[in-house]
Length: 189
Image (tube, rainbow, N blue to C red):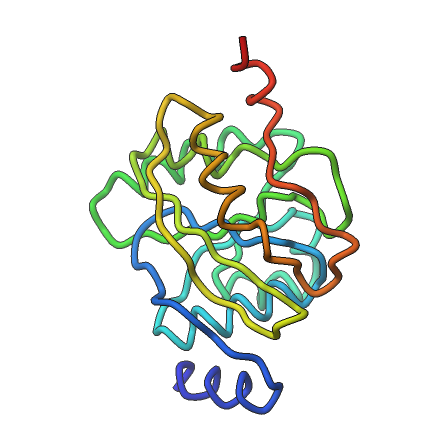
């Protein structure tokens, strides 16, 4: 039912979904420039028959919205103390069951200096692939690109990420943050 609903909504809204939905991995959703990004990624995931887990800041889970977010796969994250949730997710990911976690690597809908590195650290710790998902407002396209493996070379890994997202703009292109991690400057000689 969700798959059919997602296909209808995407068609009526004029958006095109591309690529195959991965079944396991850490999915990077970018550019994250609008509140509609969450809705769009859910539709694209449902179209492929997958209900992912999504880390969302805990403040959104107050009142009836919390119930709805949990039903949609939302997991509350305390940005001041994310370690406990990350440890539980890594343990769950290593269980052998299908596991797909969506992270908005930009961490905010506004332009920033760096992406959050949680997607890379979780994928590396849990030995999961990183699936690159995108939303591109100018072309009204959303979907999935390549899957990569996190290595010990964060710069090389991020070069692959940058190459994929080079032409992806988000719904509000002026809010887009270039794919770059703080860890990259520490890794350079």
